[in-house]
Amino acid sequence: MLRLAPLLACASLFLASCSDNDEDDGVDPDTTQFKVMTRNLYLGADIDRLFAAQSAADVPGITATLYATVQQTNFPERVKSIADEIQATNPALIGLQEVALFRTQSPSDFSTNPMPNAQTVTYDYLDILMKELQSRGLNYRVAATVQNADVELPASLSGNATDLTDVRLTDRDVILARGDVQVSNVVTGNYAFAQEVSVGGIPFRILRGFTKLDANLKDARFAFVNTHLETLSPGNQNQATELAALVATYARPLILVGDLNTGPGSPTTGYGVLVNSTTGLTDAWTTVGTGSGFTCCFNETLTDANANGLDERIDLVLYAGGGIDPQSTAIVGANLTDRTPAGLWPTDHAGLVVEFRLTH
Image 1 (cartoon, rainbow, N blue to C red):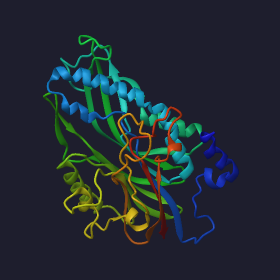
Image 2 (cartoon, helix red, strand yellow):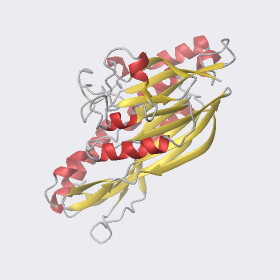
Image 3 (cartoon, rainbow, N blue to C red):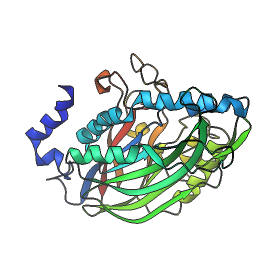
Image 4 (cartoon, rainbow, N blue to C red):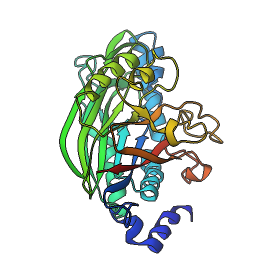
């Protein structure tokens, strides 16, 4: 019955909430009111556990355990809850992070060719999400995509140390645009700074990136940026510094969304680098939000009994420029009723939706 709620709401309101129309119909023609969302889809397992590998011999077992967790956290089931959120809130633009693409190759050739080359797709989170949205008649399209880390490791999926399968994870950030949003001047890129880590003595650089576009919605024009900053230090601060320089070159008004892996605190954090008088960026939650605004994080298996594990505010919506004002905020994916029938949270984060009014 819970899954029917958004559909019933749409049936009763029909075009008002299920079409591309926004909430500002019938108000001042010189203003446009719309919502944006930031949503981390969650890779499906805590890949930081790979950093505990003491040697290359440890890697296949850890990789197999992580891939089993990805299967257990079941994105094809979780995506229905995420689509529920999108259907209920009707954001004009959505910034997605950790839009994973998993591929496998058997037998493994990692020992002779460690470069990512597995081609058999097992989970394509973007394809799964878009098909779910389309099945509901929701008019969204992929407006911008950036490929970040692309990593392949051997896994003992059968439990036999000599029978290995390569598992490849490609991480992406994506912007989805609703059908009535005109998009231009798309820019995608990766940060120059990439955190260096070791997995069982094997060196990796964790590549992260950003996507940007210019949006036109009912004559309201603004830049929209989506990103996922590094968790580790100094990567977070260094990438925030790069992002601040990029944002300075984009037109105003501007909205920046993402899993920034940083929140209010010392000016030396990534948050302090971004939210200050120099950049002109303001945190929408501090303007109109109420309560803690916590969005991170549920446990690795998404089976928390409640939302008490959310104790950080790192999924943020920032804005800059004249004529744009946040009206309201909403946390999504943090109520017990948001869980899947199997009891999984939609992702390991809650999402954030902010409604803006833009004068033009």
